[in-house]
Image 1 (cartoon, protein in one colour):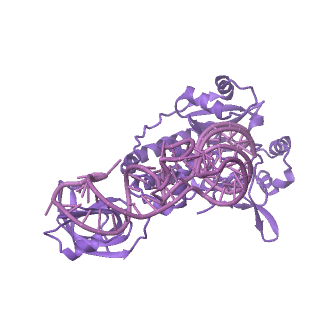
Image 2: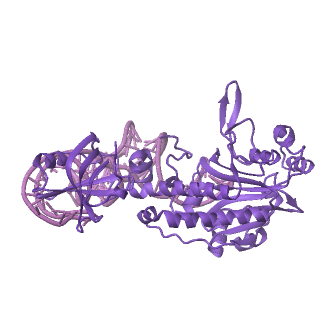
Length: 420
RNA sequence: GCCCGGGUAGUGUAGCGGCCUAUCAUGGAGCCCUGUCGAGGCUCCGACUCGGGUUCAAAUCCCGACUCGGGCGCCA
C-alpha cells in the first residue's frame, strides 16, 4: 500500500493516508475525522456540499481507533489545525475497533500507569507515550553512533550463565536442560575477557536481570544496560568518555526530537561538562552518614540537592565496590555517575593482575574456582583497562523527568508484573 | 520484605452508616447544529474487588484474601 505519512503531506496533491480514527466531530453541515498515524494527527474534512452523503454517513459510523485508509485531495486551510486538511473521495475501513476502549487515547482522561501497562498497545498510541519511545530509540541510536565514532565495537555476551558474576545481587535461576543456570546480572566478566581477546574497545547494549525484591519507581528486574570496556584507558579517561556521551545524547535528542519533546512538555537543558567530581569522603559528610556506609536514598537525595546537576563520586572505600576494581590503599579507582535524582552509572579502573584479582576475590569471600573461565583470561596477556555500565532507563527517566521508570520501558518487568 | 494509603460504570473520580433508585467528567447509543481543534446543546446507557462479620440498616464500620499506589529497605 503506497501511503503518505502525516508528516509529509503536500497541499494541492492527491494523497492516500492510513491510520487510526482518533476523533470524529460532526457539526451537522460539516464533519471532521481526525486521523492519527505514527507522526501525528491529520484532519479529514467533509463539508456536506463537497462530499457525497453516503461517504459522510460511512465515516460517521466508524468506531474510534478503527484503522482506515483515506484517499483524498489535500487543501491548504488556515482553519485546520495543521494548516491543511484532506477532502476525501474514498474512505476504506481496514479493521474496526471494538468498543469500549480499554483507555482514552485522546488523553482527556489520563489513566493510571497500571491500567496503561495492561493495555500497552493502546497506551503507546497516545502521542505523549509514543514520544518516550521515539526518544528512547534516538538515545540508543546516538549511544551506538558515539561509541562507534570513538572506535568501540559492539558485542553481544550471553544472558544465560552458570554462576553469579560479581555477587551482591540476587539472580534469577533458570532451568538449563538438566542443570541450574541463571539470567546474567551484568556483562562485566565477558566484556573484560574481550580485553584479553584484544578487541581493545567494546560496548554492549543489552538486557540485564536482577532478582532483587526492590519495589520502587527507580528499579526494575529487567533493564537495558549500556556497557563499555576499554584497554589502555584509566578510570579518568572512561569518565571523560561517559560525560561526553551523556552530553552528546542530550544534544542529539534536543536537536532531533523536538516534536516528541514538545508532546511530553519537556525542555531539555544540556548538561555542562566536565561534571563535578566529589570524593566519597565529601559525599558522606554532606549526607551525614558514617564512613563505610553506601549512600542510601536519603543520602543520595541530600548530596544530589547540594550538587544540583550531574556529578561523579570518586575515591570509594574498596569494601563498597566489587572485587574486580583496582584498589588504592583502602580506597579504589571506582566512580559512580550521579544525577540529583538517582545513580546513573558506575565504573572503574579494573584489576588486570592475576594474583591481585585472586586475592580480591578471596577478600570478598568469593571462590576463585567459580571464576575459572574469567581468571584464565588474566594469565596470558591482559592489558590494563577500565569501563562502566550505564542504565538506559535511568538515563531516559532523568532526561525526560519521568515519574516512574516503568514509563521508559514498553513492557516493564517488576516485582509483580511479568505480563504483558 | 516492612510501614502508610487506596480498590466505586470501559477510563478517571465524588460519596465514607439511613437523605445512594450512587456524583461528576470522559466514553457509548441517538437527536440538533457548516469550521471543529478538550467543539457545543438535549435524551438515554453503564459501577460499589471478593469472602466473612457488626447493625433494624453497609459503597460507607471490623476481619481476612486478592490487588494497586507511595515511602523505606535491598540494589544499579
